[in-house]
Length: 193
Image 1 (cartoon, rainbow, N blue to C red):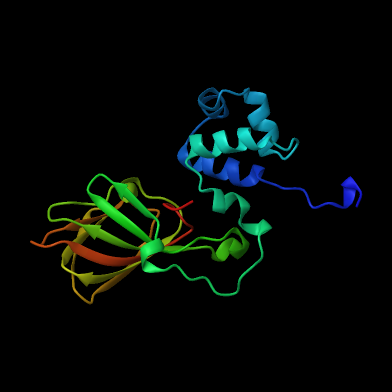
Image 2: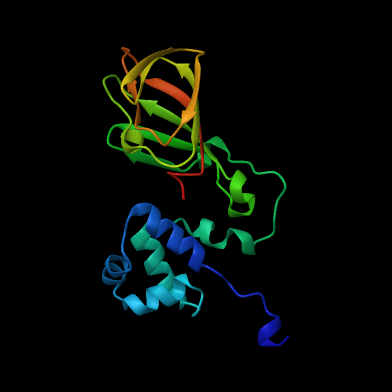
């Protein structure tokens, strides 16, 4: 097969998207990765195909999951299952997020992530406190919480659900005496990309 007929690996868009989402400049990423700013720029524009060690370093600097980078190059599966013992988790301060569904690039505008969020008493989420693109849907499984959205506060109890535009500042606070456990769905993905 000639070079022109091969499907090129196009990591650039994903790397650029994550870099911009994290607010990193080309210069910062290049310095942390130990490569030139020009090389990072060329990789992001798919002008050059990175060596595997360069790709791994960039993924590490940007905290990108390798499955996210390579997902479209493996066989597509119509059903995605994450067994409870295989869930990825993210810890931010006192909050634990357990991934329920992996965001997939192939979903395009319909890409979403979902997770179980666990907040100990007197703990609150942080990432949404400035707002971000997209929408969120939450369902309180156990405990009592408050959604602080813009300048308003909404009480949430077991069985309650809430949805809102994520572009305004929002924070979930545990106001009860036990761990608050909730199911959360976010689009576009924020935590597990």
